[in-house]
Amino acid sequence: MTLAAMQARFAVPGRVEAILLRPGRREATVAVEAADLLTSGLRGDRARAGKRAVTLIQAEHLPVVVALAGLQEVDPALLRRNLLISGLNIGAFRGGRLRVGDAVIELTVPAHPCSRMEEVLGPGGYTAMRGHGGMCAQVIVPGSVKVADVVVPA
Image (cartoon, rainbow, N blue to C red; front, side):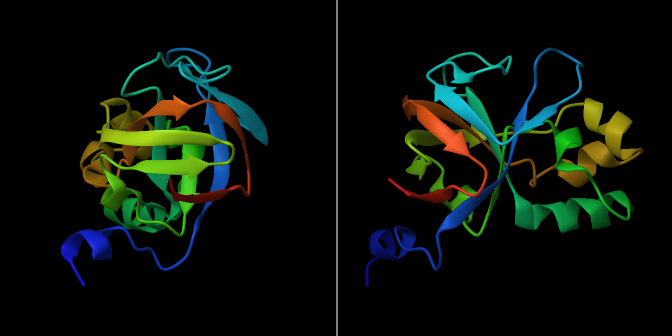
């Protein structure tokens, strides 16, 4: 089997665990059950069209962030990513496309942590998030997304 063929395979489909909107700079993140994913990002989010229109973080990375930050738990809303995805290694799909609900997105660049992580996670929060901040994506095909939707390569 070729490397390209192995990279296109996945063990199980992913799942949308949470949808989080960031209505404004430094405003609290709002969890919703469903949202429209437009070329400009999720309706109600402050993102703009382009390669950072929507952000994803992998649910499996949360325990790592918790451990590295010396915490007992972390609310995903504090991490300020739009979609919490489980079951699919989103980092392995950089440059690739995923179908999320009715939408198709293209993973573009890592979502690096911001200095705000020191505020919400405490001292060392920025470093705890490095390498675990998820991915940014641009919207290729707009559509609706809801919690529990399947996430698969497109």
